[in-house]
Length: 344
Image 1 (cartoon, helix red, strand yellow):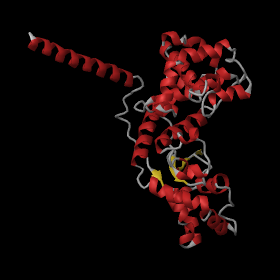
Image 2 (spheres, one colour; image 1 turned 90 degrees about the vertical axis):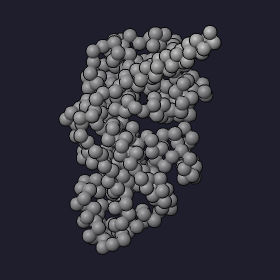
Image 3 (tube, one colour; image 1 turned 30 degrees about the vertical axis):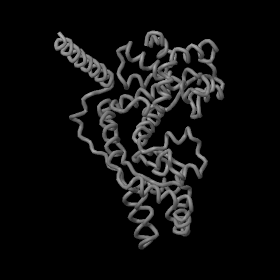
Image 4 (cartoon, helix red, strand yellow; image 1 turned 135 degrees about the vertical axis):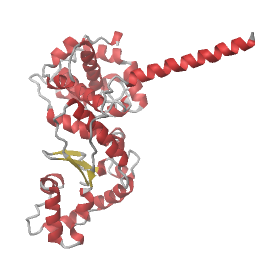
């Protein structure tokens, strides 16, 4: 009798394991698509290392090499990213040396060389994300991707033919330089190598679909940012939700636990159609927390609620991703979403 009892327990445990595995797989497969036939290998060109070498050899030869190799990005870097003179200026070498010998740039270089000696994980993430982009947008143009150092003032720069990644903005939340610069703790969460691929694809979608609204109220901002999150979920279906939302696991849990209460608070306080810039910023901008929901809440909860609305919209309507991204009527998305946190 005992033997049968033990066998029954073992069988029950096995069945429970299969059930949990099925539930987990089902959840993970929501955004998954077949990208196995898409041939793409992303490379990150180390512009930062090449730029560092300009004063070390024959100056004019090095400049000519940079201009030929990096084309318009070289001038964009000089004029717009680090804001020095162009390479045709007689004082260019002096400006380059001043920049490279700046204390913050020297320290950034040391940390970048250590943190990014190997970038295989980042190129893998970028390849994965851009393969999904090509799945949904077969004719999309994939720009050249280059890395740079800019003295902590730029994360991702997008031009017609290039995507530039400011590596000194992704040194990890525990980087001592960020303490010296007095960067807030809530901002440091977003400054790790795990966020690079997400920021690159976010820059792509922001450039392709810039924010446009006649009313520019809280709802419009929530839906626009929520739509961007939905896009990133589609580009990176194997990423955990907290990574995509730039949250900790605890912050993600808060959103999932109090979704209904947050939405109800916005509605009851008549904030959904507020066009007050400060009110909007409290819900969608970077901050330690969302003021409306207390200090235990994560920031940008309006964006996450926007994602939940968009998610419900896509679930309840026969809409393709590109159609979603082209839709400018954010009120329509809410109306057709049938969004109701009680049933989500």
